[in-house]
Image (tube, rainbow, N blue to C red; front, side, top):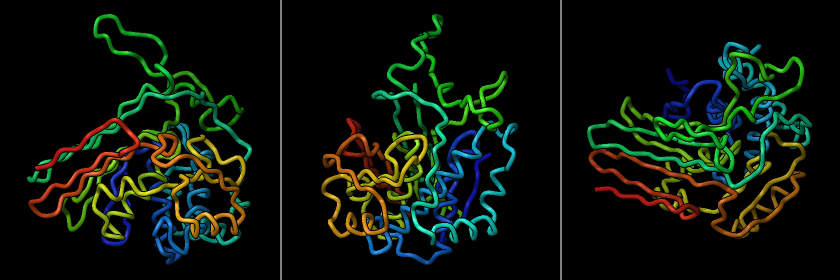
Length: 297
């Protein structure tokens, strides 16, 4: 069953551990508790970045096969823990720096997100991934299915809940999202983006549901990512598309984040897909950073 978290009048449904989906719910809960402007390029952009850094640090410390987690994800989403996270955010970005890396390999990756729905309120958010380059390079001969290499996300750190062990599933990044409003399906989201998927989905959903942006504008707007797509934030840096407003870059830098730039519409900030259902209308958008397409009628 999915994890269900509240954000304003929305219910966010995400995949449970070993997926990192809870990071989205934890970050949204903290943003709402702090009472900040949720606009990803607004006055409180640095606070949002600190929230995402803190929630990502929780992921890197605790996420694993649910049978191996020493702190259940329900504890990470409790009001008391969200309050502690908010207190740490007020201390600034340096409070969330971590030297831990869970492993992982670099490369172009092979991940897609797909969302679809009908006017009766049935929908699917699906993410397919081989993880890195071309997966494990092993094909199951009777089906032609290429096997992934998500085992790269295990850690060899002794005692870590995500330590490589027999019969254990690795922590992973894939996190399809469904949004309900008033008991009805209101949206579906998904993205390519490695460990930054919660950040990308947060920006897409906030822009669409909070700021009222059309799905096409929400997925194409300039993005920034704390730590890029890396598994862990090992210093306080943010990757920004160069067309991000100067005011947002200045606020991030003033808060102590090291700001690095990449080209506009760059795949290194992910490929977001978003679908909204408003009554009988279905609106869909694909990311201009990808080779995908969208169709609605």
